[in-house]
Image (cartoon, helix red, strand yellow):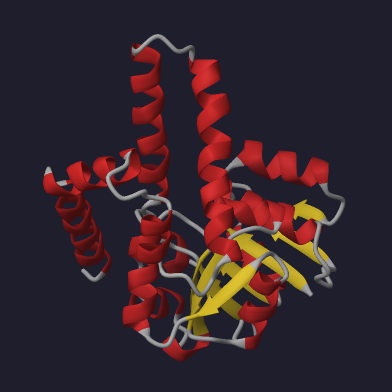
Length: 256
């Protein structure tokens, strides 16, 4: 197949890196020239990646067309394209509904698959949510990692909101690392300790899929111990409520 990407940013680069190390049958990858530095780096790295003359050239040639532009410019970019009816359309444009993409591309909503790819795809790690479930999208993202097919729009929106926790995850590590540094530890030592600690916790959850997060929290919190104390104080002082409020706000933004 010929894969085309309208938009050549970080996520596009991650998908292409993952594709080139996958079992996908890739004849050619066409990327738009907008982000010249990223496009040039990809074409230099992979012989099957070509920089198209413009976005229309990408749309004309692609069997699978992946829309990866920023939401702020999506309407202008997509409305100017003529997309052949046989091209499979996958939109990874954040917080942009099926009805909008359909309006801008002239394709029916049912012909558009939305997806939430994350940077880990470059290493065939992580998970991609798609809606609706569709064979081409399933096979594409399945070759780059795990795939979750959402039952409906509500489930897709919820997963999009949950994925917005990535920055907060690293923000928590930043706070704890800064606290350790303030108490006299070097930044290098703090990172060397925290990174494998949190990575190991994620591995525990992966290795015990039938254990609830509540079960795992209790297992890793000795009664009357330090872990129990920290979570209780976090919860009582408003940490849980603030997080839930933030998730609700993100979900409301996604549904506008």
